Image 1 (cartoon, rainbow, N blue to C red):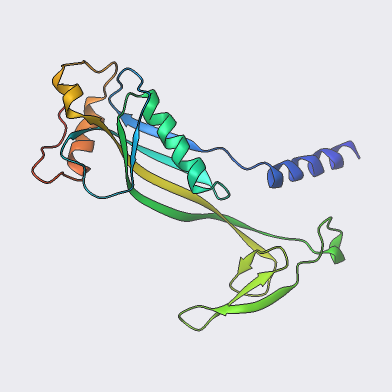
Image 2 (tube, one colour):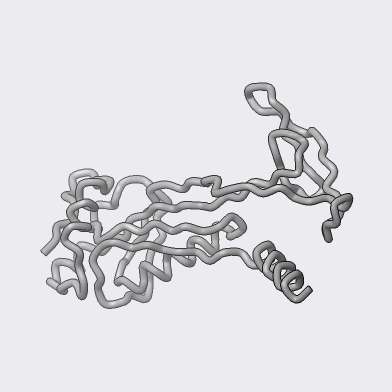
Length: 191
């Protein structure tokens, strides 16, 4: 019986508590900054150099402002002056079957209704919980959001010859090769 209650508690925690956002950063580290500009996307502005790239991964459920704040906090901690977004993707990470009341669930029964159609003519179904599926089963898909971005540093600060606190030369070479180039600007170099 004790094991049963532990399983119930673990199941509730898995549903109620969302996973954490994670930021993986590769690049140079400078003295932390206070103000970081958030540039939606496009080419690197001419007055900035590329200093690194970051990939943020978050389970579905976080809003865009929470994601933006997490990226800005990471950028501040490594001494960036701006963040530019390369891409945002929603990736399916898995799925699970929901259990209805006929089999002893604690949830109300999720009744399905067909309310939209895909471009190929297949129906989308939505249950009373707002969960969607391609057919009227109780399968719920799980997603994560992946945001790829570049951290930038003002060229005027680089001209003052502040040395990076920590730099990864291999990573900086990869960043230089993949970064969006500013019109007329050269990619960042590693010292």
